[in-house]
Length: 318
Image (cartoon, rainbow, N blue to C red; front, side, top):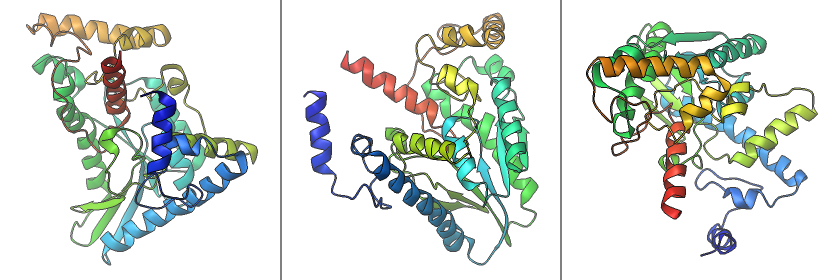
């Protein structure tokens, strides 16, 4: 099947109104791309209203009369989470950033600077067990180890932030606002709009947005003099760089990092030497080896899994 035939099939299958996006099925990005500028802007204005609705519904349904201790944007420093922070800055009380100990410092500083410019208090938590300690013990992760890395490097940071904000789990709730989108990857295609886990309410206000919608929002805000900040790291390596665990690294990713951030690549090179000295054998002595069946992805890990799925699709088609 040709690409044009595939796009035609998508348009036939989609029965919704792209100018009035619903909460069930995301509009295919190929359809959004056919809209003219006024139509794209009208759609995005409705998506912004929808984002507020999703957050408010999450609190109404799962708050159940409890005190909302905080509403926190989960801010990796990537393009999507930056748009999320920009949209939600009027509702959010805090931002949370997980310092994974294996990220690019420029991204961490971007998060700090952006939160300060938005007047958004930042809670930055450092992973209690460093990436270095994890790989010296187990070797470098592949897709099968992704969920363990997520749990150790990100989830425990979120749990530490929750404990800081929620002092009474029976009477209080904290809202974690995530930038997950259903069209981001196959793994994200069925993410709930909102759910509760213990004293944490999870909300995904951008669930129905497409990549063209994200770009349109940026253009609209720039035109009115309220631009969305841009992380140079994302522009250079097409990901936030806040977690370089390597579980879903694409081929030549380390060399791409080396071009723009040689100090980070040198850190990974040294880790490889140390992991080999610790006795780990191939493939676990190599960062980004890619061996193993993918494990479930975590709530804050989407771009890495999405990149892996894209690479797998391209590889199988070639």
